[in-house]
Image (cartoon, rainbow, N blue to C red):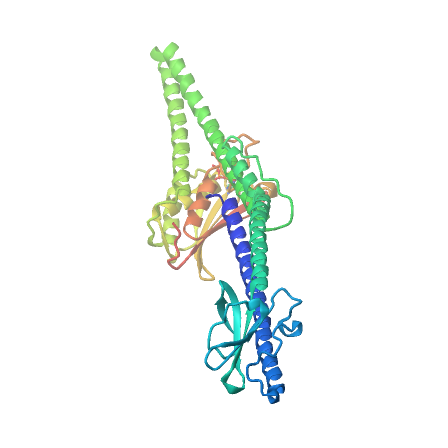
Length: 456
Ligand code: ADP
């Protein structure tokens, strides 16, 4: 009984049966009121009629009233099934005259008044009475047998109707609810069939744009996002493994070389050790970048503190000059640019931009850093006189493992630097933008909020 189909069906049936029952009861009681009022009216009219007959004949001086025909068909409604029972009693209670149908029985003694419900010989009747002259009393009983039989039949019909309504509501409710919930079942089935190895399945959407359609659509959109996330994760792992394989192969080959021939040859040992160290350094850098990216994805443990962006940039310039052989690195005279950021992470992001500006520059080229404030934001711009970035590449350079110079096989990096810088800057509530003109140079800008507006 816990399924929605059952619950809705039961509710539907209960409401319908309640409506039917309320309507039935209202119809029954209205009918009863109309019929009973008519019967009471008949009894009251008969009393008045007898009073009139008695008054018109009083002059005859016959005080025992037995000259009045109490079986007059017009008076007692002899054509109907409910013959009226009429009786006249003296002031002492003696029966002076009565309808034939009363035989020897006597009506309730002494009642003179408007019609009231009473019982006579086990039957329900309307009893009415009125005074005649000389203390005599006329009483009329109107049996209600016919009305009661009719009302009993009516009640039975209503009960049958309610029962039929209940069965119909249960069957109809079940069919309608099942049909209405069919998309939910198909949603459940599809969700069950989806596994990480097969994220391509989708709910088939048809019919009008109702709530269930929107639910299905939302579910499909969620699957789209999941599939995209899953694919990029797979690509990420594949790219990382691919990049790790090259230095590993180098290390393995030189280890083999050493093992076979090189142990006693100082030149081979020298070359091997250098190559192995280079490869290990490469791997170390890649693994560090991967680790940092994983941290960024998991919600970086940022420890923001007030610091000077210009000072941080100036320190990076000093470090960069040590590695930049034929490229000059300059910075505008730094005036303090206060921001609130995690020093370690921000230093890493700045280094990515400066390192790229050196790596992708031309011999004798220039790298220029400008730090300042603009429109309530702190910014650091790193411009170079390098070869620039083509329009096609601009949209992708912030993606993981994307290398614009891949085709040229320069192998200067893993394509993770800008992805890292972007997620670091964004985690600080900032933005990173790029402008580039192929052949002339590129300019990357980090923008950070000056206020305490740190995400992470
Ligand atoms: P990488 O480790 O390859 O440098 P990045 O994510 O830092 O990876 O950069 C992605 C790509 O963007 C690089 O391969 C390079 O082609 C291009 N790129 C980045 N910075 C510059 C720049 N200053 N000048 C020219 N090209 C750049």
